[in-house]
Image (tube, rainbow, N blue to C red):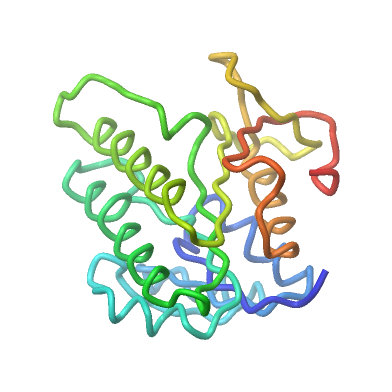
Length: 218
């Protein structure tokens, strides 16, 4: 597993609080981007370089400059509920702008790891104009955009996230239990494994839940 220069987007989130220190521990050089400057100190304490930016303010040129130095970019950003407007802006528009920039960089584009959720590219819910509808449609649009691209990428599809400790992984087929759960720490472990490989897994997207198989066996 070689050392990668990694950019983690949404580094103040609940998955990133596991993935950033794990990436550093694995020997990677990590730059952690957050919108809230209050999160910067913890990231530095974890061994990362903290970068404070609002993803919704970046145009395609800004994105290209941001992404160029890195081997891998991990999208772990999200509006986290709240307003539909902010959800569209972060989960769809900012992610699409990043993908535009990756395509512009062409052969120099970093490997992209998109943290999504199981079945996102086919999901649908009633349009009530709310934040959940905006989230489902945003993640579907972004995942489909990647699936239709020729970019180097890996989409991660965990089921409902929990704060339980990670014990192992179980891969999912199209049949999913409505009660399926995935520890956030497990998502972080899959991110670390994906970063270390720097290329897609055999499954892409890879849908998974908490289980007993080792992540290293993916």
